[in-house]
Amino acid sequence: MAGFTVVGEAVQGDFLAAVGSGFGTDLTWEFETAVGTVTVVPDVVRPHLAVVARLPADVPTGPHWLRLRSAGVLTDRIPVDVTARPPSTVRVLYSGEPKPRPYTVVFVGNPAIQSEAGDAFTPDPVLTDRAGYHAVVAYCLRNILTEAEDVLRADGTDGRLRIVSVFDPTLGAEEGNSLAHELAPNLMETRRAGLVSFLARFGEVADMVFVVHGSTTHNRATAWFTTDDNRPDDPTFTYDGQTRRHGRFPRIPGSCTIPTSVNTTGMTALHEFGHAASDFTNGMITDLYHDVTGGVPVNKKVRTQAGGPVPGTFATYDGTVFAADPDRDGIGPYPPTWSSYHPELTDATRPNLMDDYWQSPDTPRNCRLDRLTYAWLRDRLRAKLDR
Image (cartoon, rainbow, N blue to C red):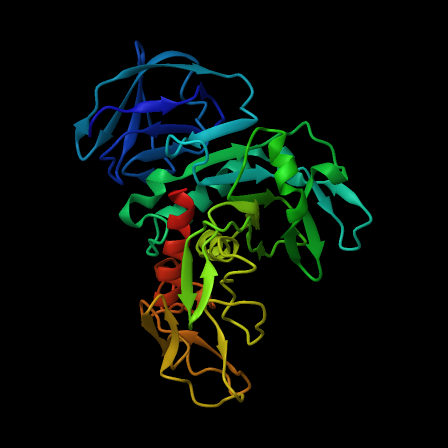
């Protein structure tokens, strides 16, 4: 390990991130004072980034020397002052590439929930559950950055992302503060039309927004695709001979809801990211666990008749032919009433990440995207990262 820096102030009960290189998964932080050392295990570790979801009160306030340990190797120590002031409203966990518009992922504690009927706004319990919010952010970061599916970390992609938390417990339960809407019977959707203006209040522009909420009745996660700000100079691609674009900038960011009660053994965060990072116009990454389709899907097609033969080829993307999956990703044959079918898997021993990953023979955390969706999404992310 080389040297490292700490991002922002060290505050008890708040996020704390360290940035450097060569961090191992066994990384620990050592806070030293004249009376002893407190060891803290970060919640998320990547080679360039380590995040503690909430700096524990075991680390006393006052001046410390901080050093990191991994594989028995210690870094040089740096001075850190720990305080007990209120946690930050806006906390940058990682600054991403030094450019005007790095690809930005924002986590938001939702202030207010719109009722199913749309006629009432109630306080979101998450704003009184700071610990639950921080735990969900940590889960999401582990889920999208450290599990088997590497679409967001291959070739160091995650080292280019900007990651931000916004949590403002002073906001009231009113329409302008509401980012979540109940859907029957138990779903929560983002109020995507208000995302841009809400984040602008905090000086943030996002490509992807995770809206964290505390509802116990509408706790099934959902996502909305991105709406790109399509421009003539955006990179093009061909899909089955049709020319489309990988938009470099979003007009409305992709978004999803994640409840504080999320089952952390699953792949909810990355599954919903897959939806949200795709685009309404140029390609939608859709759910594969039902037969419904529509719009402009990347990863689902329809046979001429339900239960008919699955074609050998699924699609041709930028001149590369991608095969179809004849057996619905190891879950079993497609139901006889289905007409839809999917692309060939990356890992044929487990369900597709966009399908019912809970049916994995070992753990959902080992599920991957199919080959076509992986290639398409990597290119789409690259278009935005390279802007």
